[in-house]
Image: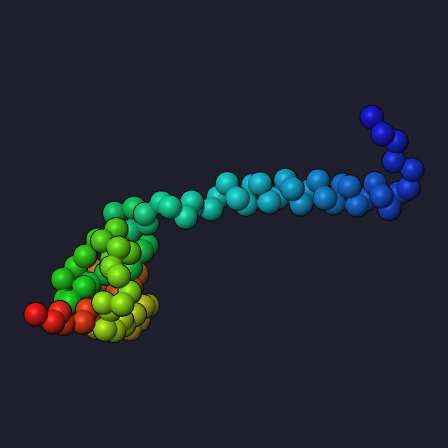
Length: 101
């Protein structure tokens, strides 16, 4: 192997090694972006309602954003006060635009 001649270079390499280790541990604890995290996957996720109907997260993320008229997010004490203790992790209300016939 190579000989490292200066103490500062040794410290730099050691710091870099520790950063790589910490990053790899941190990355292992992150959920992949393509995993659907919804009411079924994580009980701490909010409940989603689309036009007043409770809707699974997997369907909500497939909604075309141009069809959304409004969204309201209630969390914490506001969600409990408005919807009850069952919704303590929050509620997301999505209202879609009316379709033209």
